[in-house]
Image (cartoon, rainbow, N blue to C red):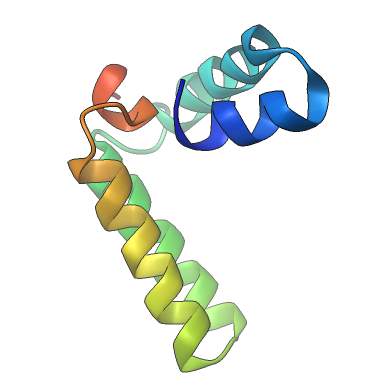
Length: 80
C-alpha cells in the first residue's frame, strides 16, 4: 500500500476501505478525464486559481508528479 491508502489506513485501520474510496474517485474522474495526467493538471490549475502561496503550489505539483511517476501509486496501478 502506498500514498493515500497508507495514510488513510493509518487513521482508519482499514486499507481496504481506502481503496474503495479510490475506486469511487477513479470512476467519477473517468467521466471527465482520459488520463491521470489530465486529471492532475486540472487539479493543480483549479487549486492554484482558488488560492494559496508558492509553496503550496510547488507541493501540489510535486504530489501530482510523484503520483504519475511512482510505480506503486494508485494512478499507476489503476489506469484511468
